[in-house]
Length: 101
Image 1 (cartoon, rainbow, N blue to C red):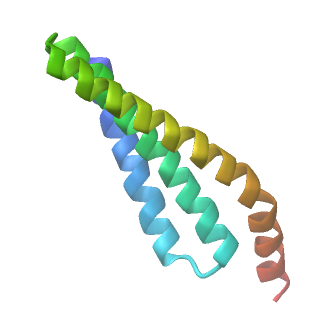
Image 2 (cartoon, one colour; image 1 turned 90 degrees about the vertical axis):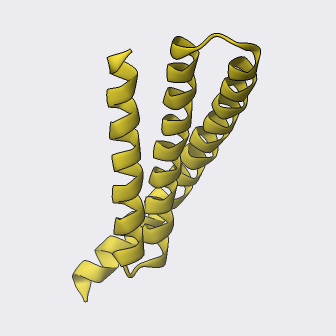
Image 3 (cartoon, rainbow, N blue to C red; image 1 turned 90 degrees about the horizontal axis):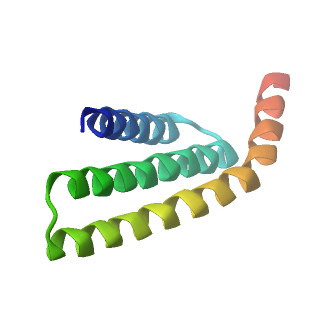
């Protein structure tokens, strides 16, 4: 389905965007915060890719691979969200300290 292809492209673009932004940033907490956002985008990519593969082909191998991708994607999204919530206050504090200097 074309909607999954669009979602796959958007999620991989956001993943690359956040990875590049994290590498180029100087702050430690903000870098970890951006890495967590990239992890969420990667998890969504895996989930959308697995669902798209299920709509294309219906075989036993496809079901197994899609189940593994969905499981890995869910783990990435959940862990990324937890890291996002953990590092957000530190990233805000770090941004405020950089503004003061």
